[in-house]
Image (cartoon, rainbow, N blue to C red; front, side, top):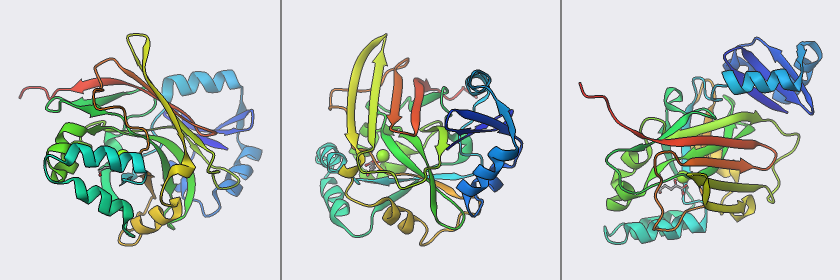
Amino acid sequence: MKLYRTTKGVILQSGDSYYIFQEDWDHLINAPSLRLELEDTARHAENISAQQAQVLLHDHLLSPASTQEVWAAGVTYRRSRDARMEEAKAAGGGDFYDKVYEAQRPELFFKSSASRVAANGEAVYIREDSAWNVPEPELTLFINRAAEVVAYTVGNDMSSRSIEGENPLYLPQAKVYERSAALGPALYIPEQELPGSTQIAMTIHRQGEVCFQEAVTLDRMKRSLEELADYLCRGLEFPTGVFLMTGTCLVPDGGFTLQDGDQIDITIDDIGTLQNVVETYRIAPK
Ligand code: DO4
Ligand code: MG
């Protein structure tokens, strides 16, 4: 089952059927038995055609984060560790990434408030003061107020590698800025846990040509999803739940940096495709 937040109401997709209904999003996604709740909703809500649903989703889709904070895990895949050790070597920060990859406690950092998140189809930003910018395609968990992982979405943890590489203490500036997080298009509520064979794929188009394309499976992650959720909820409560990006394994080579107009497509099996176009964020002069 998939849930979409739109300006016209909540859209539920169950198999090939679509339903629309009015309900408070935060209340709904924190329901104690979300799948059962949605099965019940499907029996009473207004049925709409796939074509009507596509029009609503095209014109009125919002990000799945209405009030929820977005957090992120780092260095959960070997590829991310290696790339970051390389970029931070000159600054003397390389060892920290290796240590956190091996440590019991994962790296977790605050990524975005809900109001800064880009929805599917909206622009994601790169910073004007950053020379090296990359997208990070990440399976993203929705953890409800009771600290249970109940749904998944596609996430993009946009990052400045030049700022992070200069000094790991600059991580918040490399990671947290306007529209540096994208989520969507839907919340996927599966019957069972996601299999390790779940594929995360990213394609970047520049002026109509593919300039990056790679894919990886979830079983390459060093940590379990539950472990990440558990650490996040050890010292924090989230009254309306929280989104947690789970780290990247797809890191473009050193010569690659995003440009204005690049189109980023991130697809995760069964969950969907998150598509955003890149823009440089310029603060208007005061
Ligand atoms: O340690 C810096 C961030 C790592 C990260 O965002 C990732 O591995 O996905
Ligand atoms: Mg990341």
